[in-house]
Length: 101
Length: 101
Image (cartoon, rainbow over all chains, first blue to last red):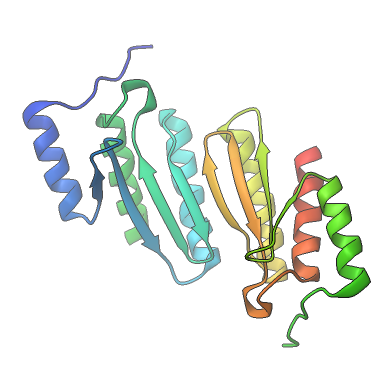
Protein backbone atom coordinates (compact mmCIF):
# COMPACT_ATOMS: atom_id res chain seq x y z
CA UNK A 1 0.00 0.00 0.00
CA UNK A 2 1.29 3.46 -0.93
CA UNK A 3 2.18 5.55 2.09
CA UNK A 4 -0.02 8.64 2.36
CA UNK A 5 2.14 11.77 2.22
CA UNK A 6 1.83 14.61 4.70
CA UNK A 7 0.16 17.69 3.21
CA UNK A 8 2.71 20.38 2.28
CA UNK A 9 2.90 23.79 0.62
CA UNK A 10 -0.01 25.31 -1.24
CA UNK A 11 -2.19 22.19 -1.01
CA UNK A 12 -1.82 22.27 2.76
CA UNK A 13 -2.55 26.01 3.01
CA UNK A 14 -5.69 25.67 0.88
CA UNK A 15 -6.93 22.62 2.80
CA UNK A 16 -6.45 24.28 6.19
CA UNK A 17 -8.24 27.42 5.00
CA UNK A 18 -11.25 25.37 3.86
CA UNK A 19 -11.29 23.33 7.08
CA UNK A 20 -11.05 26.41 9.29
CA UNK A 21 -13.90 28.03 7.36
CA UNK A 22 -15.94 24.88 8.06
CA UNK A 23 -15.31 25.14 11.80
CA UNK A 24 -12.31 22.83 12.25
CA UNK A 25 -9.51 23.93 14.57
CA UNK A 26 -5.88 23.16 13.82
CA UNK A 27 -3.78 21.76 16.65
CA UNK A 28 -0.23 22.65 15.58
CA UNK A 29 1.40 20.55 18.31
CA UNK A 30 0.03 17.30 16.88
CA UNK A 31 -0.66 18.64 13.38
CA UNK A 32 -4.24 17.46 13.86
CA UNK A 33 -7.67 19.00 13.24
CA UNK A 34 -10.48 18.99 15.78
CA UNK A 35 -14.20 19.74 15.76
CA UNK A 36 -17.14 19.19 18.10
CA UNK A 37 -20.39 18.07 16.48
CA UNK A 38 -23.73 18.49 18.29
CA UNK A 39 -26.96 16.68 17.46
CA UNK A 40 -30.56 16.62 18.69
CA UNK A 41 -30.12 13.44 20.71
CA UNK A 42 -27.91 10.44 21.38
CA UNK A 43 -29.80 8.58 18.66
CA UNK A 44 -28.92 11.27 16.10
CA UNK A 45 -25.30 11.47 17.30
CA UNK A 46 -24.77 7.72 17.12
CA UNK A 47 -26.51 7.49 13.75
CA UNK A 48 -24.02 10.03 12.42
CA UNK A 49 -21.13 8.11 14.03
CA UNK A 50 -22.29 4.95 12.30
CA UNK A 51 -22.23 6.60 8.88
CA UNK A 52 -18.77 8.01 9.63
CA UNK A 53 -17.56 4.60 10.88
CA UNK A 54 -18.54 2.95 7.58
CA UNK A 55 -16.77 5.68 5.60
CA UNK A 56 -13.70 5.45 7.87
CA UNK A 57 -13.51 1.68 7.46
CA UNK A 58 -13.89 1.95 3.69
CA UNK A 59 -10.93 4.34 3.54
CA UNK A 60 -8.99 2.52 6.27
CA UNK A 61 -8.59 5.84 8.05
CA UNK A 62 -10.18 6.26 11.46
CA UNK A 63 -10.96 9.19 13.75
CA UNK A 64 -10.17 9.67 17.42
CA UNK A 65 -13.54 10.59 18.86
CA UNK A 66 -15.37 11.01 22.15
CA UNK A 67 -19.14 10.88 22.53
CA UNK A 68 -21.18 12.21 25.44
CA UNK A 69 -24.90 11.97 24.71
CA UNK A 70 -25.61 14.35 21.79
CA UNK A 71 -22.02 15.59 21.41
CA UNK A 72 -19.11 14.08 19.47
CA UNK A 73 -15.60 15.54 19.77
CA UNK A 74 -13.46 14.51 16.81
CA UNK A 75 -9.70 14.65 16.24
CA UNK A 76 -8.20 13.75 12.86
CA UNK A 77 -4.57 13.18 11.95
CA UNK A 78 -2.59 10.51 10.13
CA UNK A 79 -0.37 8.63 12.56
CA UNK A 80 1.69 6.94 9.85
CA UNK A 81 2.52 10.34 8.30
CA UNK A 82 2.95 12.09 11.66
CA UNK A 83 0.51 14.83 10.59
CA UNK A 84 -2.30 15.88 8.29
CA UNK A 85 -2.80 14.13 4.96
CA UNK A 86 -5.41 14.11 2.22
CA UNK A 87 -7.17 11.29 4.11
CA UNK A 88 -7.93 13.65 7.00
CA UNK A 89 -9.36 16.26 4.65
CA UNK A 90 -11.58 13.69 2.93
CA UNK A 91 -12.87 12.26 6.23
CA UNK A 92 -13.48 15.75 7.64
CA UNK A 93 -15.51 16.66 4.55
CA UNK A 94 -17.54 13.46 4.84
CA UNK A 95 -18.28 14.21 8.50
CA UNK A 96 -19.47 17.71 7.65
CA UNK A 97 -21.59 16.40 4.76
CA UNK A 98 -23.25 13.69 6.88
CA UNK A 99 -23.92 16.18 9.69
CA UNK A 100 -25.91 18.33 7.26
CA UNK A 101 -28.20 15.49 6.14
CA UNK B 1 -40.19 9.28 35.35
CA UNK B 2 -38.91 8.05 38.72
CA UNK B 3 -35.54 9.48 39.65
CA UNK B 4 -32.87 6.83 39.87
CA UNK B 5 -31.35 6.78 43.36
CA UNK B 6 -27.63 6.83 44.01
CA UNK B 7 -26.28 3.46 45.20
CA UNK B 8 -25.72 3.42 48.98
CA UNK B 9 -24.71 1.04 51.74
CA UNK B 10 -24.41 -2.70 51.22
CA UNK B 11 -25.83 -2.63 47.69
CA UNK B 12 -23.15 -0.14 46.70
CA UNK B 13 -20.34 -2.12 48.36
CA UNK B 14 -21.41 -5.32 46.63
CA UNK B 15 -21.78 -3.64 43.23
CA UNK B 16 -18.36 -2.00 43.43
CA UNK B 17 -16.75 -5.29 44.47
CA UNK B 18 -18.26 -7.07 41.44
CA UNK B 19 -17.30 -4.25 39.07
CA UNK B 20 -13.71 -4.10 40.37
CA UNK B 21 -13.41 -7.87 39.96
CA UNK B 22 -14.56 -7.41 36.34
CA UNK B 23 -11.82 -4.84 35.68
CA UNK B 24 -13.69 -1.58 36.28
CA UNK B 25 -11.92 1.22 38.14
CA UNK B 26 -13.75 3.50 40.54
CA UNK B 27 -13.10 7.22 40.22
CA UNK B 28 -14.06 8.53 43.67
CA UNK B 29 -13.84 12.19 42.64
CA UNK B 30 -16.71 11.85 40.18
CA UNK B 31 -18.19 8.68 41.69
CA UNK B 32 -17.85 7.12 38.25
CA UNK B 33 -16.53 3.80 36.94
CA UNK B 34 -14.10 3.49 34.05
CA UNK B 35 -12.81 0.68 31.85
CA UNK B 36 -10.86 0.39 28.60
CA UNK B 37 -12.07 -2.25 26.14
CA UNK B 38 -9.76 -3.54 23.39
CA UNK B 39 -10.85 -5.39 20.26
CA UNK B 40 -9.23 -7.01 17.22
CA UNK B 41 -9.98 -4.09 14.91
CA UNK B 42 -11.96 -0.90 14.43
CA UNK B 43 -14.74 -2.97 12.90
CA UNK B 44 -14.99 -5.14 16.03
CA UNK B 45 -14.78 -2.10 18.32
CA UNK B 46 -17.52 -0.20 16.50
CA UNK B 47 -19.70 -3.30 16.27
CA UNK B 48 -19.52 -3.57 20.05
CA UNK B 49 -20.25 0.16 20.41
CA UNK B 50 -23.33 -0.27 18.24
CA UNK B 51 -24.71 -3.02 20.48
CA UNK B 52 -23.99 -0.90 23.55
CA UNK B 53 -25.61 2.15 21.92
CA UNK B 54 -28.85 0.25 21.34
CA UNK B 55 -28.84 -0.99 24.95
CA UNK B 56 -28.05 2.51 26.25
CA UNK B 57 -30.87 4.06 24.22
CA UNK B 58 -33.33 1.40 25.41
CA UNK B 59 -32.49 2.20 29.04
CA UNK B 60 -32.15 5.95 28.39
CA UNK B 61 -28.76 5.82 30.07
CA UNK B 62 -25.69 6.66 28.02
CA UNK B 63 -21.93 6.25 28.45
CA UNK B 64 -19.16 8.78 28.05
CA UNK B 65 -16.79 7.02 25.68
CA UNK B 66 -13.75 7.61 23.52
CA UNK B 67 -12.75 5.41 20.61
CA UNK B 68 -9.35 5.24 18.95
CA UNK B 69 -9.23 2.44 16.37
CA UNK B 70 -9.58 -0.84 18.32
CA UNK B 71 -9.81 0.75 21.77
CA UNK B 72 -12.84 2.16 23.61
CA UNK B 73 -12.41 4.03 26.91
CA UNK B 74 -15.68 4.10 28.84
CA UNK B 75 -16.81 6.19 31.83
CA UNK B 76 -20.17 5.52 33.49
CA UNK B 77 -21.98 7.63 36.06
CA UNK B 78 -25.50 9.00 36.49
CA UNK B 79 -25.46 12.79 36.12
CA UNK B 80 -28.97 13.25 37.50
CA UNK B 81 -28.02 11.36 40.69
CA UNK B 82 -24.55 12.91 40.91
CA UNK B 83 -22.96 9.44 41.19
CA UNK B 84 -23.31 5.72 40.58
CA UNK B 85 -26.75 4.14 40.31
CA UNK B 86 -28.17 0.76 39.36
CA UNK B 87 -28.29 1.99 35.74
CA UNK B 88 -24.49 2.21 35.64
CA UNK B 89 -24.14 -1.33 37.01
CA UNK B 90 -26.59 -2.70 34.44
CA UNK B 91 -24.90 -0.92 31.53
CA UNK B 92 -21.43 -2.01 32.73
CA UNK B 93 -22.62 -5.63 32.89
CA UNK B 94 -24.09 -5.38 29.38
CA UNK B 95 -20.79 -3.97 28.05
CA UNK B 96 -18.83 -6.84 29.61
CA UNK B 97 -21.31 -9.41 28.29
CA UNK B 98 -21.24 -8.01 24.73
CA UNK B 99 -17.42 -7.87 24.81
CA UNK B 100 -17.30 -11.61 25.52
CA UNK B 101 -19.50 -12.57 22.55
